[in-house]
Length: 269
Image (cartoon, rainbow, N blue to C red; front, side, top):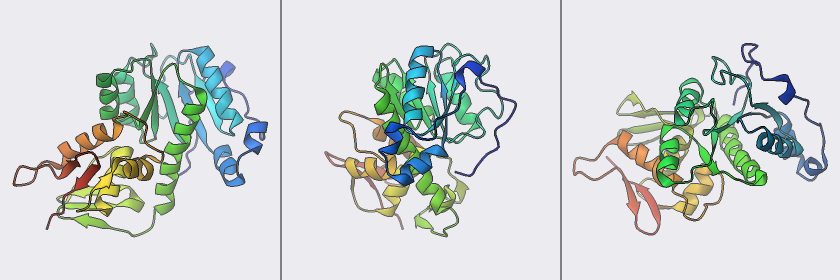
């Protein structure tokens, strides 16, 4: 992810900002490359719950992350509010966020990875959040360590993509073309708009075009983590990609579900 200059247009409440320790007991237990990467990573938390935010912020800081917490700013989605950050954690149930509308504002103004916190665990709400552009979600009440693990997984995916930028690799099948290093995709010669997670999933399927890919492989290779039992985020993201690609002349979707296994991108000539 290219570095950004932090904009003075966005001011977090001073009581929620303080310096991150350069080394903590938890951080010293991590491999040096992980510690070094975390210390250069800035995370923004948008949540009205001051106590829960303080706990999560503390755990992230223990792991070496630089963390800003916005619990009071009246306009959390001000222009350039996200400059300088590598990832956003947002509670969509926050009064200022106004539910999934707030998530839509974030996605309209930023391509950063977004981890959603929500007290609503029903499937329809989670599917709607993923559909709007969330990269992952955790249902509250949640364990801070689980959130940290999700943050690391999202950042791993982002950094792998950043490392590939400039590599002239081109993947294609039929009317679909992807440039993984540039995070760019085209469908029938037109730009194909994908969220970060949709891009990762479609890239994995395109690399294995014509062959079924298990949900476990998709989760590890595209989401950067092992699958969670009963989780449907992969299904929701691929449902969105299916709509964007349309159906084949024979009426079949270009991405097919393989019963009790995973998904397959059908080969086209």
